[in-house]
Length: 341
Image (cartoon, rainbow, N blue to C red; front, side, top):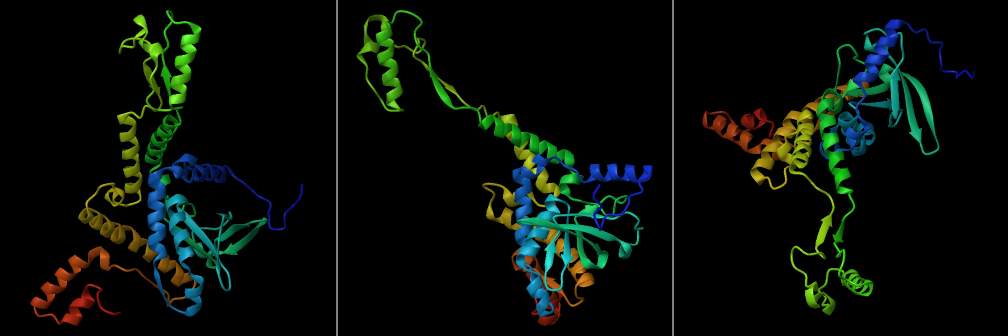
């Protein structure tokens, strides 16, 4: 057996085997769940919102923390539940796969992470100390603090509902579409049938005339042969409702208001949905990411997000009330975060 230089002999116990099984269950979700529209809608929204972060801090940090980095962090938090990046001298390298080595206790400073990053023609495996990685998690089971879980894992039943409904709709939509024309069982010669069939086939949806169909007792009536019957998908109302419900539940598991993606929603409703998404999802995630960056990279790093669209009306009302009660305008603006700082 070939021994890799980084591989250590494993001493596995029943306890570690059980924990491995629990970890596998906690971090596994149906592959199809990641393909549903609600998941991509939510992942895309979070990714784009985080990509809009404005970096304050040293210039090297601004060069390292690109919009693509934040976008991928947001997408991975939704889809995988976590995101790990190796801290290089002048860049961050996203881990394609990672796992923490056995033997570490609950003190994270002693954790060591086996990081794999893939390239077009190969991969690289390294074991890095905890202070050399960015470790970001949507959440985790208290029994498995090293194993991130995301909304798809925490709400796996909802993910399965949405996945099954959308997959059923996809299969139904793939049903062949065609039209069947019933032909008379008797009373028509082969030449007459061939003539009419060729004219119907050649018509391609256009009107055509045929004396053959008006001969004697061979006239067409609604209950006679030559009726067209449609063959194609049967998009049942209940199935569409289940898919729509699964879409909304998937978004709700991420903390995103379904109205944000509701077709036909009025502008006021969508503005309120955007405000709630920004305040309840994007800003808290930004705080979490900022904390990790300050600890692992530089204490002077700050992430700023534009909030004027989210709660300007509410803040302006607070400013008005403060000013009317005698508070200086600059103090009132600062109190609601609308100052220049």
